[in-house]
Image 1 (tube, rainbow, N blue to C red):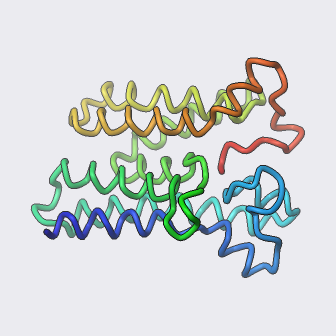
Image 2 (spheres, helix red, strand yellow):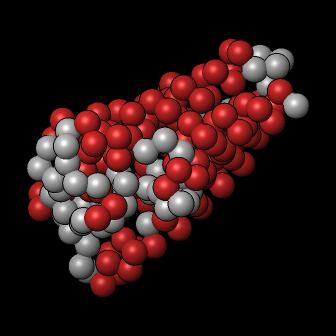
Length: 204
């Protein structure tokens, strides 16, 4: 029963939209009404307010980190990998399909990063470094997000993390890739905007 409570709370935490919250705090338009219509940091950036976008990014990452950290240290049988995995998936799914926004959420990159940093700091840093490297070389943030999603389970195996973690990361990666399906279509058509144009939406 306690495990179910942790999972439900993690999902509800993931459902909190910092894009909407920050937009209201900074008296900006609702991010669901312009740009990509996704409640994410990059869409908030399209409003022209960098601080609102940065705080959205940090909030989305923090909720992923917090949910997993609480499960690691305060859940029943602290360190229980199955509980940690369930909570990680719940908070991630909450961001993608938030109950508070009629199940229409962001793309999950920032929340996934927070989750990875909580699961294993080296894993999170490796994934972050991979994203930065790919983004710098190709100037395509969506491509960086997609390749980083693929690399995450590989890094987890290289770090000899529990098999439950690896399987969870595979699931998260597939969901993240699916949420980027429009970006994939643009990449294949050669129409995806580059970072220099500030039109990307990898953090949504």
